[in-house]
Image (cartoon, rainbow, N blue to C red; front, side):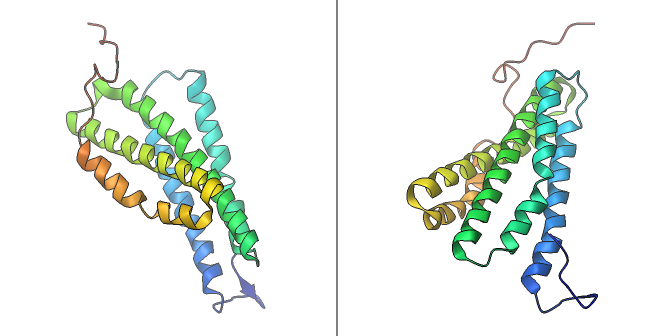
Amino acid sequence: MQLPLQQGRVDLSRPLALLLYFGTFAVLASLWLIYHRMMSGTYRPRGIDLFVPFAYLALVSLVPYALYGLSHNATLEGAQTALLDYLVLYSGMTALATILTFRNLRRGYIYLSAEDRDFAWLVFLRQAVLCGMMTTALVINKVAGPSQAGIFLLFIVPAIRIARLRFPHAPSAERLRLEKPAQA
């Protein structure tokens, strides 16, 4: 997204373009925080642990282009297509973040305090619900249309809240199928 300029000055008469420009930074900052949380654990990476973050960052690099497409479509059909592209992109990033967050929770489980386990669990849970709801919205969009998909997306925040209330604590090591740590 580019800053709207007119004769070398910021064009304040285009508030949507300004909002999208600064919104791009907010989205990228939140994605960077998610990435930081995913990679903050100490572990020995395997092949999937190298591929998934690379794929995540590759999708993150496409966010400004998706937002540019959203802001530069004059027709309703073009805007709907651009929004669908953005949702597919964001859904993919959420799926990859969910995979890495869960792998990090399992990997660092024995090193975390109960409070930190619960925090890591709630981050994973939020991402999993978001991923599931966005993927479902994409299917609804294909089957029933964008209006119904948009209505469905309004339930993301309540669904995350319900999941957090229903499952507030990290599962036990047995439920996560963790190996017992080697005795020193």
